[in-house]
Amino acid sequence: MPVLRAENHSLELPGSSDSWTGDFTFIQAADCQFGMEWTCDGSWGYGQKNGYENPEYENSTWYHEIRWCTSMVNMINKMEPKPKFAIMCGDILDAWPNKGELWLRVRDKQYADFQKVFKELDVPLVCVCGNHDVGNSPTQQTVQKYRSDFGDDWFSFVCNGVFCIVINSQYYEDPQFVPEIAAEQDSWLDEQLKIAKSGKYKHSVLFQHIPWFLKTPDEPKVYYNFLQPLRETMLRKFADAGVSKIFCGHYHRNAGGWYNENMELIVTSAVGLQQGEDRNGFRVVSVSEKEIRHEYVELENIDEVTK
Image (cartoon, rainbow, N blue to C red; front, side, top):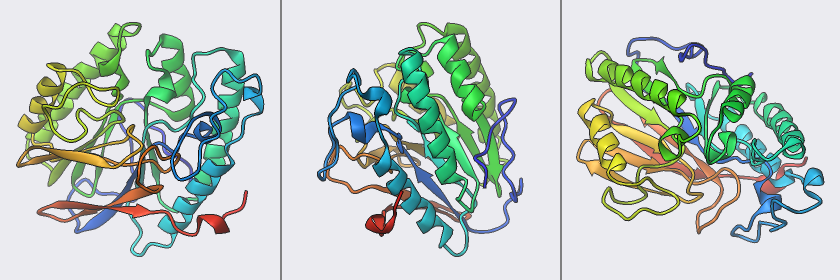
């Protein structure tokens, strides 16, 4: 099934309904990051540590990412009943989009293999923008490149009576080169949160790449979370609108916690290269009328997957 593309900040989910039709599941994953294993250090014996400035970078490979993602596709395709959708919460590709023509050539090859693997998925795939997808400091050019490849980088959709909001978290991390785009997303988000607060839908959930926090809302700032007071401002805004779950990636480990008794933030480890003690995997999210539950599932039969 082709990877879905949002247009006009909206996405139509095939086979979905605007109203509640009963319990269902969806898949949340993050950081498939084609090419990272060749470049970086990882856990479980993976990570070639060749570095981003290696003169052989144009000949870099992502064999392991293809294997890991193919395993994910195979596992999802065997699920019954089928999940309503899968969503990849950022860092889809590893090659930075702002480093020059060589990097863009590598990136285009990574993109082609990503599409090749996930077109075999039997459920719709939704993509979320991460820092590697537009750069740590997004520019007009990197944003346009992402949108050309994947569609809009912020949007909303409805799945069987559940309101889903997707944002580009990089505009909150470093909007210095794209202040107008960041302000546009922020204004749009306020309107979406009014919809969430209206009570029209059974649940409202948020998807993004960088988590607002890793374990507790008052933890110190590190590379993988957001600064205060922005963190508290945004979390309170989401909670006041009735958002119950915030799904993130970026950490390459499982983490997360509760902002208050009604809103949980979930950090899902990578489909791709691990940087902690977790194994490659994804999250199965079960939605009922009264609650949303989730479980991290490790990849299976990776060694049986060939290139």
